[in-house]
Length: 372
Image (cartoon, rainbow, N blue to C red; front, top):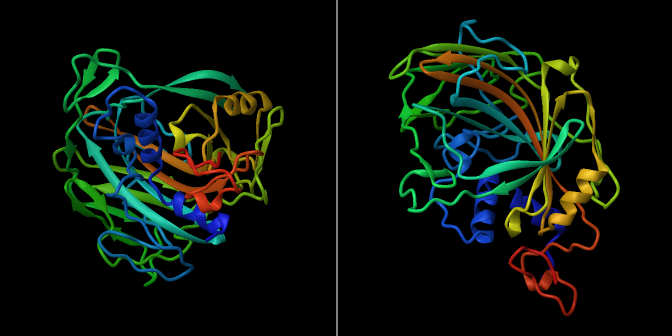
């Protein structure tokens, strides 16, 4: 049986992206890996996030899930600013993230995740990404997994022979989001606290898109184990690339185009080009710039990334976001509103697969999901 490529890609794009990376590094490394992963750093990842099924205009959620919409919130102007460039210089204790993910069929369809979590300290990372080259807005990074002996046990090995404990989750009391559009016409939502993480109540239904570019998005936390706070930022337009096909070739840049923001400085564009995550990530290209509508990933960085290796189902992830931070206790808490799009990338000579039947005669599907 032959599975259409777009359907294959759709099934893989639903995996947690942080889990892709950590699982790949565990396969590629001889070092032991912790049972925890970097998804604790990002409230948009992991199984605790509210997620949904593609839809347009109507949606329903259960167990904190929400479809085709998003939430944002809280009253008050507080100490946080607005726009894409957060203030604050302390360690990040947590994030409330409202993320709209575009469906592969077009910009009018999508899903939403809403999750917030605040901890007693910054979440330590078990993978060190080291810059191997930079050009313009983009940088090539290679992963390094620190080694600790003796092992760190329940803690995290953050550098060779350096262990750091995970922080503990903290309640911030009742949390309210405003600036979100629900199907019933309301624009305010009280988040539910579950194990000191925050998500929409079961059955929450959102409009799509849940906000327009420039809409005020606010969050207010009443305070609990940590003091209360208010955050405010702005909505962003759904992200959609104009490129019909994305091809990576040695010696050629990768050109990305989309509809620019009305105010390019009001939102940030983050690009993550990862072409080896299913085989044990060898490296990735990340880019950050204003929302100008175009980005050229330099040919030299593309060539070097290709030289590190390619696994099956390579992708590029483009995120448009606006954020704000405010000081809470010993560090900062952020509110991020984002629209994310994940697209398949073609690499000439690389055939992706999930089983042998999808490979040319005489080839088999390898552990890295390529035909050889």
